[in-house]
Image 1: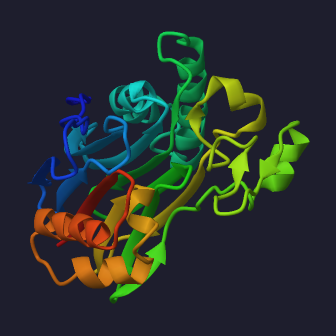
Image 2 (image 1 turned 180 degrees about the horizontal axis):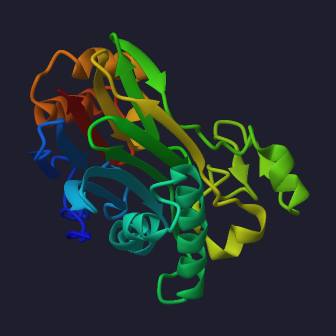
Length: 280
């Protein structure tokens, strides 16, 4: 299957200037990537993790990219970093029905996280994952509000869906929960969590979903870049602004770092994690 261990963890400590950054490329020359992760100004340790790498699997090249944005600790995103892609690729339908394989793997991984409680604690994590198959087909899935944005002919195309409590109020209430809207704050599930879908969060799981939205796209000559990032970027930078910044920078590592710097300049307080994939 190839090496499925993760790229370097994005668990950081120290001030906001602390960075985790790096880059790589596919063996077939299909794409190259860079990433940049910056601890935010919040008074807690860095809770974002990432995966960015290419592997060989059953005669194919797979590009594996993910941002896992944790909350109430980093145990769940660290678990996802080690296991989620492996679980997806192990699904029998991966080559014939990737949509079903990804869906099943997300649900099974969440069940595994909950079964490991209390070892993993009461926290949780969002996830946005992208699988690039032979440089030609892209599969994106997500739970929560980390986001994937694709650029075709310079136009930003959002490939993921932000799972916000206000947008999924009906589902939450049908599960016995409620959505609070306190003045000056974002909508929260049971007054606590600002996303309506997540991995983990055992105390809220009766009212949360962990099933992903899955989308796909063909990578052609008009496709320039893919951006995956946590909400530390998207709270202050629009999809098109992010594309406009990154598309001008040929080195995807420098592009990812520039996006993180822009988010800091716009006073984003959250952890900022960003991967840029540039297609050849």
